[in-house]
Length: 186
Ligand SMILES: Cc1cc2nc3c(=O)[nH]c(=O)nc-3n(C[C@H](O)[C@H](O)[C@H](O)COP(=O)(O)O)c2cc1C
Image 1 (cartoon, rainbow, N blue to C red):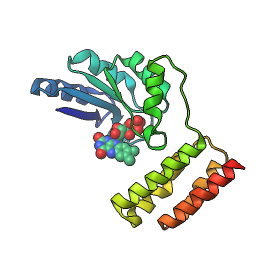
Image 2 (cartoon, rainbow, N blue to C red):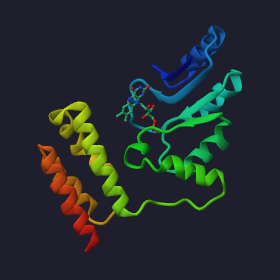
Image 3 (cartoon, protein in one colour):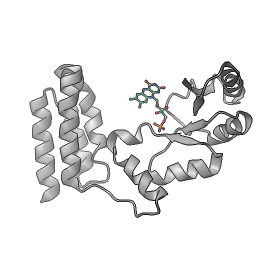
């Protein structure tokens, strides 16, 4: 059994440390630490030094989490904290390739980036699966922000992000993706 914790109610980290010790004593197999306080939500910076503190305190595996933006950050976190594993959150939503990019880095290979046509394929698939799973109304509401995460760094991406804020059906979304795909290809 594994658990995942945050820093706690304040930034000292005392509460996380105490919980990690209790968890280990209870027989928990591994612990993931997202070092942000409850009030921080997703804002501010994750305090990676707390991951190191917990790693130095317990003997069960510690998985670090928070602010992994690109593949290189995984190695940075491991070097800085000594953690046994890394959990990737938000970065994987628009860039599901981040996992293979991390593997490339670990294997001393050059990090590869998907070509735009592959990105559009995945976006369309994500849209279709979401509609199937959540139903059109809820899925489209989610897609209004999430589709934009896939186009980071592409030409005219802010225009695309703006345009999908108004989509209300799956068909609408597909039309916008197709139009944007043509725009980036021209
Ligand atoms: C859309 C979304 C859903 C999440 N759902 C959960 C969840 O169900 N359980 C959980 O422990 N953390 C959840 N998280 C938090 C992430 O697992 C992670 O701890 C946090 O995003 C920090 O990592 P990151 O900086 O790599 O995103 C969620 C985050 C996002 C953005």
